[in-house]
Length: 74
Image 1 (cartoon, helix red, strand yellow):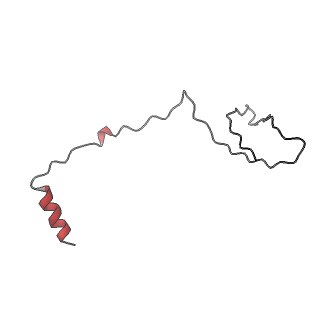
Image 2: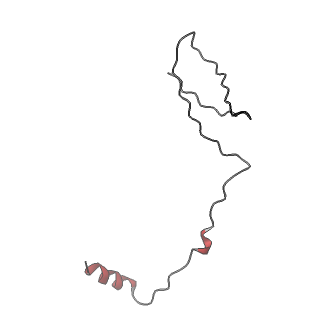
Image 3: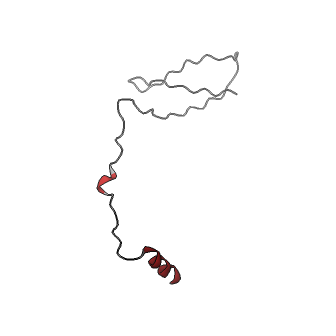
């Protein structure tokens, strides 16, 4: 069994042409094709800017004692 991985292009008519040289002679083979679109170098998705959601909590009081109080309620 051989696993071959390569990147190729589908033509304008939507056809994928494969010309794969192998070491096998005239035998019957099973072929599995997985089509996974490759990300283009020129088109990259911009990552979301979370800066508008970032903030800072201003806590009034002792955070540890409040945590202990909440935990003791269970």
